[in-house]
Structure formats: structure tokens, C-alpha cells
Length: 137
Ligand SMILES: Cc1cc2nc3c(=O)[nH]c(=O)nc-3n(C[C@H](O)[C@H](O)[C@H](O)COP(=O)(O)O)c2cc1C
Image (tube, rainbow, N blue to C red; front, side, top):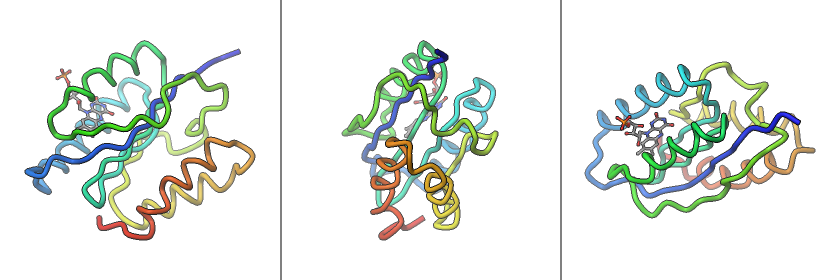
């Protein structure tokens, strides 16, 4: 069966990051991920990053090595690093999603709610809840 790889983590954003730095990170991330057929989302809020990456295993593992070494964040807590036979973002936006506002987050959560049978969707929704409640974008 076709198997996609998923990596999901939460990390602490470096304190010195400016709004401009985050804008640039968002821009590069979406453009590079779109060219490499990586789906998922990246969110920055309450001094944390939350990212889900879905795509081809080798590519994601190489990418994640770079992401782990990136000094723009620290304290990376891995939630998922595994194969998945039910990719969550297959039917979502064609573009890699950058969650920049509460409205973006609402759209993402309502997409995840469409498939409550997928346990990954439910877990992601739970993990997104604090951002929905406290989120400062
Ligand atoms: C929180 C965070 C998330 C990132 N996510 C991605 C990503 O999804 N795709 C990507 O290409 N780079 C991402 N990056 C940037 C990479 O860490 C790295 O800078 C980028 O891949 C360029 O590496 P290179 O110039 O060595 O190729 C992220 C960085 C941070 C801090």
C-alpha cells in the first residue's frame, strides 16, 4: 500500500526572532515545500512552532535533520515520526499551509473535523486546541 511519511513536532521559538524573521521563514517554507510536494502546516504562536510535514520518507527525514539543527528554535518535542497509510493533508489545500491567524486555524480545525474516524485528525485537533484558545498571531 502507498505509504506517506509524517513528522509532527512542537518547538520553542528563539526569543530574538522578529516578526520579519517569521515572515521570511513562512515564505521560504511554503515555497520550498510546495516545490517538493511536502504537505502539512506550520504555525507560530505563543512562542511555539507547531509543524506537521507529510510526504516522501527520505525527503522528510533529510528535511527534518536540517530543521532540528536550525537555531531559530529549540526544545523540539516530536509527536509523530512514522509512516502513515492515511495521510491527513491529502485532500486539503494544494499548497503547504501557513497558519497565520485565528481564521486560518479555524479553517484547519474544521478540515480536521471532517474526518473524525482518522485518529491522527483527532490528536492534531487536541494539540491545536491551546493555540485556538490562547493563540496570539
Ligand atoms: C520552525 C521551523 C520550521 C521549518 N520548516 C521548514 C520546512 O518545512 N521546509 C523547509 O524547506 N525548511 C524549513 N525550515 C528551514 C530549515 O531549517 C532550513 O533552514 C532550510 O531547509 C534551508 O536549509 P539549506 O539552506 O541547508 O538547504 C524550518 C525552520 C524552522 C525554524
